[in-house]
Image 1 (cartoon, helix red, strand yellow):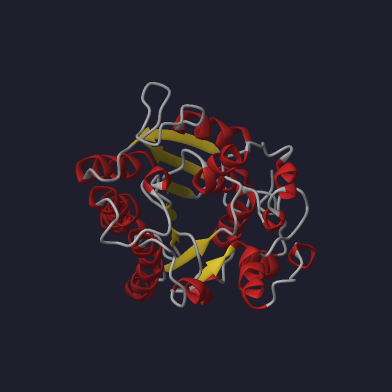
Image 2: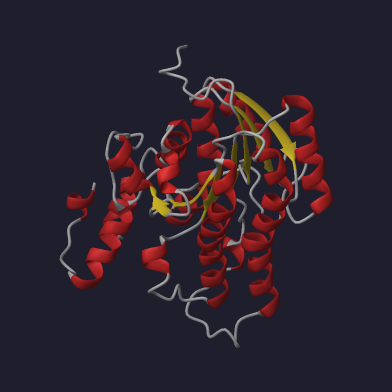
Length: 307
């Protein structure tokens, strides 16, 4: 392997919330670029989280990272428990002495989510749990990991959310708690970007488009191999993207020596694909958010024009 094929060789990354979906793909693509990647989450081969999926585990993610060309290290971690996160960061410091990339992708709140219910009619415990999973976990992880991260000039912090700043701040996401949970990472990246400037660090928020996560595929009753079968019933699903796409987006950011130009920004996988020239796993270059916005004013907008 060369520095061209593995530009992140020697770099240390932590992907918090890497069990499945975007987090898993980000970890794998960082590994493909040569990084050593610590992957965390609550679902292991011995224990299942409240999400209730047994197929994807952090051990499985770590093995995929290693198979891709990196080094995957699975560490079971509940990011709502500060002492567990502290132990994780102390381990990374002890074993590696540095942290170059921190990805905050902790979520796992889909099973709590319903749209179209007024906030005062929504189950309060479910709403507050979404805020814990999508906001509190990120705050705990950043607070604990940043002292190690800033030791390395040029370090990168990536907040992962659903939606861009341009989209989320001008549209209601049809559930108040979800809206708050998905806007918070955008603001976190902005604020942490301001704090990291003097240390030569960069913080950004990255959103995938319409993501074909394991849970989304299951919802439509398809697999990654035959996902287009769902387009017959929902044509707009044709603009969706595999998790590989956002994984490649974050890997491209991490390998870019000029990434500081993005500091504090809200970015998305389609936008970064145009900037860095990568494609999705099938060779396409979908622009989900471009399509979604265009469709609001032009109902006849074609999926084909955004792939």
